[in-house]
Image 1: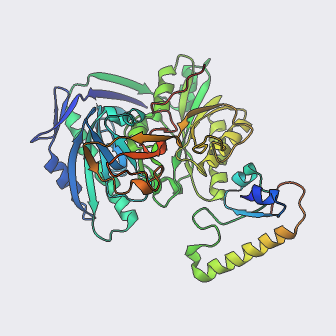
Image 2: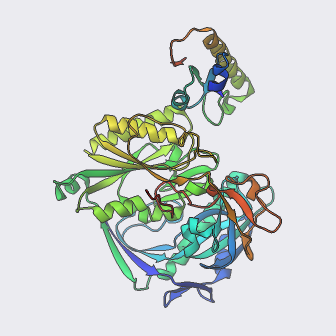
Image 3: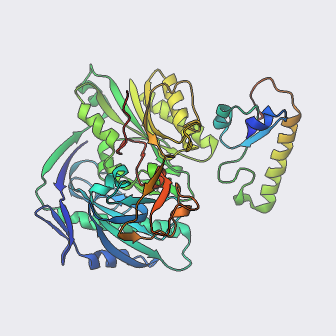
Length: 76
Length: 428
């Protein structure tokens, strides 16, 4: 999906938990997420804690979307 | 560490008043096994049914397959840390009822349990169509949490297999195999001119019903470690997972690991099998990095020249597989991967979720996405209620006459990524 949307000319940020797979499939802007069972939160931290994680990751992803990249880039 | 494995060849299974082996026939006291299983109050019903090769029988949803074994001499007991007390195993003598299996089935736990046909065209994809199976159909207490149901089902199978295995304690085996691996330095000295080969055994440990246990330790909280191969033959590793049926490493496969078996066959001939590195497949990237770092470090520390690596499951574990491959290769050690493939029903997609340049030698155990047809069977052990939600099934899979159309991956062990299956490729 990442590749097809980019092929249509729209930049994509892939927020993913297993960065090597994202690199293998060819995503250009990669934001590492939390983990496979809960990519954008953490149930151990409750709703409030998860919201903070989500806000931080989404802001990072938006920043990545605005950033010019020269090849595959992981935004740590 | 040296283990003598006495193989008692089972050629039939029947119900009897006493659970025993007589003249290569296993007799099972169904009441005894049902009572044993129902000691666990999480289960409200247990029914023993027998399934023999060639019968018109379908078993589903299958949770685990377990070969009955008993520890005759040496430390510890079968399934240490789970059924027997925690104590090192792998030494002494063990008897196995080869050709008999305990199969747990019944109402689905998650969605990743499978099917075994005892005859017909789908049977040939599963090694357990040719064994004499003691099936235990379990039913959970109402409202039982899924994880508790999984644990209860897992323990039911292991307890029953250990109890049935006792029947082999005083029987003279038909064949006795001997397996020995010495402490590392002695083992290297024994065959100094042969290449030192190790086996990297990746255990499913994703959590959420995808777990494996080593001496009772949940593999996801374990760091990679080194083990003697014979520990496996006494049940040091047990399956507790609902991973896709086709490449689920059942407890049977841990007891009868084909990679270990093949490496021992060549031990002292053209290679020196020095040991096993046990590792996991966790769901956080940091865990994957840490475990694969440690695997590579242990492989280097052991002075290995080459390794075989197997994985369990597919998708994100392919990343663990590739990280292990890359990092071990970078230590100057030759790597061969053993896995299965999921290229989609048309075969056109990438077969594994991840790949690295170092993965240049790979043995494939088959394509799990191929669609096959299962004719109706006269008898179902368990239930077909969940076929369409099981991995490999889909809406419309189950036909009104009881026949099934589904992907090959719905069959237990059909493409198992260690080679204990029936598929082979032929070149033209």
